[in-house]
Amino acid sequence: MTTPLETKAETSLPETCTLLLSLDLTVHETFNPHTNMATDITENTSLQGILGPTETSTIETEVVLGKGGMGIVLCGQQTMPSREVAIKKVLKASGSYKRMLLQEAQITGQLEHPNIVPIHQIIQNDDDELLVIMKKVEGKTLLELLPTFQAAETFELPTTALQYLLQICHALEYAHSQEIVHRDIKLENIMIGDFNEVLLMDWGLGMHLLNQIGANPGVVGTPCYLAPEMLSGKPEDIDVRTDVYLMGATLHHLLVGEARHNKTKVRETLEQAQRSEPIDYPNHVPSIFAEIMNKACARSKSKRYQSMMELREAIEEALEHWEAIKLTEQARQNFDQFTIDIAEFKLDVAQVSRNFLRIRTQLESAIDIWQDNQIAKETLKHLLMFMVDYYIDRLEISLAVSLFSDVKNPPDDLISRIKKAEREYQRLTEAHERAQEYDPLQSKSGRKTLIVSLAAVSVLLVSFAGAYSYFVSPEVTTLRLVYTGSLVSVTCILGVFLGRKTLLSNKLGTQMARIFTVSSLLATLNHWVGHMNNESPAGIMTVDMFIMAGAYALMRDSVRSAYLIALMDICFGVASIFYPQTAHPLLLATVLFSTMWALLDWYKEE
Image 1 (tube, rainbow, N blue to C red):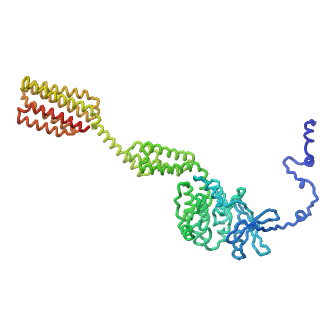
Image 2: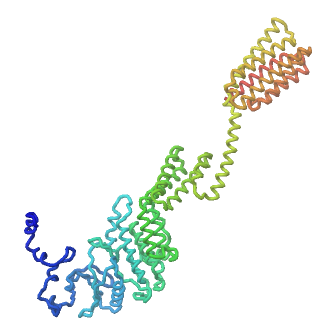
Image 3: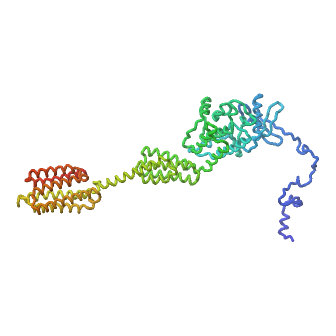
């Protein structure tokens, strides 16, 4: 049962749909009233009766699309099918020109590829002119578009143009599979159509490697692009690697803004092509593309990419990982500047650390983005090795060893250097520790306390001795020596105690404290033994002078003039042997002069 709504929907369709509804068709079949319904055209009706004359005719116009040394390309109009075409013909009636145009048409006509201009027809008109009818392409060449890629103030990789070149690489791969080479690849021969068609034009120098169509002897091509083998003029020297060279030179022109062979005179240009030396590209050209171009344009064909596919894949890989490559390039430039700044002493220690970490972070980020980024890995290795050497030179061996552990497959010379540095570091560490043990600055306050105390006691002792001799008795007894010796010992021990914190902080101070303590105790023991055995006071005092001489002789590391002081004490001791009556004043002189000399020496040292 049909509802009112459904009835209304059916009756609302246009009348033109009535015919379609009357046919037994499904929703997936194409409806065409000229094929789905009977017409007055029968099977016996001729095609001419339907369309009129069926012969294709092409009418030339005066619009010139292009012109070269041999031929000219005009705009034409075809009648069947109706379309605009390009008509190429020779400029003058020359048999050789016609033959070359025919060869070009034959070669291009064999190549059916989206990036190669198709040949529609090859005809000879009533005027005996050879006409090659082909697709009309409107657009600009990459050479004309080059200023748009070079317009930025800073270098930007022309990724769009590189994509165009990749399409041309595909076209050449196809041509090479058909044993055909182009021999004149350049920016001027790459056309970008108004609707983004990418076409490799002008196959006039194309050559079939097997049947030798187009293999005319002689030097042909564009001088500023020529591969070195093209200079021989021998067709047998040409193969697909010649086109690889030309594509590399085209890539160079695109990225650098000038032809690879950039001399102004033809002879110089040909000599430059003959040498085909690797180019040291400026810093703004990414190194990965520099390597691609130098390899593609190697002088020896064996050192080039061996096929257009290899070259294309190298360019595709560079484009695919462009972000990682940009990071790598920035890091490499920063690294180069970093080494210069260090060599010229422009960076302090903190700046060196910051710059190193920044460059290392850039390289590690580039590797994280692209795991097979060999340039970043090699640069990181060189950076780490450079910093290892830097820290070795500064004897910061712990930092050098730490970075060395991050270097993958370090060279043998670096391994030997790090081992040598570790040994040197160990030696210097031990020397530093020894120096610290005998550094006078470490215990200077303690030694000062000790020497000042002894100097003060010496002055007091001499004063007391003089006063005692004058007011009490000039006689020096063994008991008196016991008292004065005990006073000196107590003073030494008190001085060591007061200055112990710094005095005992290293071996030098400890040595001084030990010598003063032991020598004062020996002097006291000498006095007690002499007193108990009723020895001569002059003999006891003479022994005191020799004890003091020995003590100062042992303090060479603590007191710079220790040997001279010891020599003075020995002289006083020898004098007292020969003149016993002078023993007491000589002992007082020994104590006073020795301590004062040591104190003066210490102040000079400070």
